[in-house]
Length: 367
Figure 1: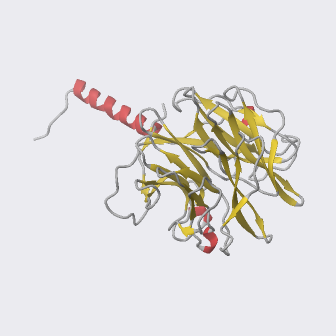
Figure 2: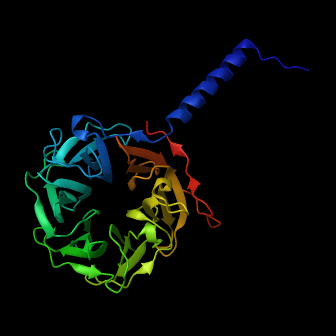
Figure 3: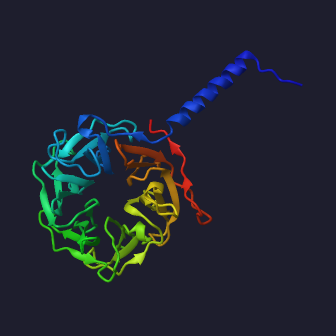
């Protein structure tokens, strides 16, 4: 027997289908950096929650992966900021944080215990290739910024936020060119709020492979765990190192067990550590890289995942935990007209089996 829906019931089901389809269409990563200052090419984002509840994201704005001075960009690439006051649902037009005659790159943002915002970045000079680690500060929640930047380390680079430790000291991971074609990493500390910086502590001197972009997270036992980008082209996985004296000395490198570019840590309110990064398929090809994260429930000893947020190989992701317990991730796309995107998802339940392939997370609507 054929069952024929009454017209009212059919209308209700059609309406439900349309609503479901519309919600599914909205549940995707959205562009968050707009306005004239945002640039034609956006990359290398970072984000943090401020004490007043706002979420701010900083990023590189230019016309290409490396921006040279031009009529449109007389000072080459610049650092911009966008802000959300509603848990990532909407974002302000981008504003310029800092722009000088060099290419200002890889910005990261953090807020100190006294309320000061610090953006760490490096200036790139191309001929000859040189870098300088620098910082700029805001003392009013990111509304205004220092007109001049402070040089932290010459001939070094950085791709990490300034982390404030339990004793108040500041720690910034850095890296430098080694023998022209490779990189070596280190850490630099300040005990006076960043006014002065102690000599750089080099790490991994016993290793003969390239490492660079680094982040660090405080563990419950008072030690520090750092993750460093390996070298996917040569199948060198992410490396880890630990410090038990506040970053003054570090252990020998240990393999993290997987390829990861630009690692970034977030400690969740429920205790887990989330590690976001750019992941790679088995072929290690640049074009098959993706935006990823893993979760540790045992203080960095093991990592569940990988979870895939986007099939975008730009990545450089950073995460912020939202008030409802979901996770907001910002990342960039790469390619011409690259943009900064934000995605929202739930913290995964504990995994019961190893992952043979990346697991795609279900994205939630930002709005």
